[in-house]
Amino acid sequence: MLETPGNIEYSQKVLEHFSNPHNVGEIPDADGIGNVGNPICGDVMRLYIKVKDDKIIDAKFKTFGCGAAIATSSMVTDLVKGKRVDEALQISNKAVAEALGGLPKIKMHCSVLAEEALRSAIEDYKKKTTK
Image (tube, rainbow, N blue to C red; front, side):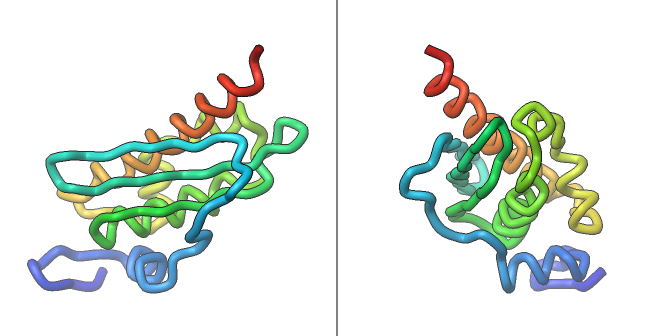
């Protein structure tokens, strides 16, 4: 664990995903878009998914927030790629945090936002395809 200003300890993996986040950006023709935010901490996440044959083939994000919010957004997009939609729904905030080598208790809400953004994007996808 590495200590940052404010004495919050982050794993090396969190710092890597914050410094060099994966899958940043938008998917212009996204099949599902999830928007979530936490007014208490000010973190806002938008997650885009592209689905083909019930499999998530691409995922991107745009996040305004702290380092943990950016790192969890980055990790959830890595975790979801290649998964079937129903498999992706099984990705929990704890799985995101564990994949990052853990998060400080005070930052666990960021992993909850990542899970909620993913669920929101999948709900949006299902609304668009279930007609």
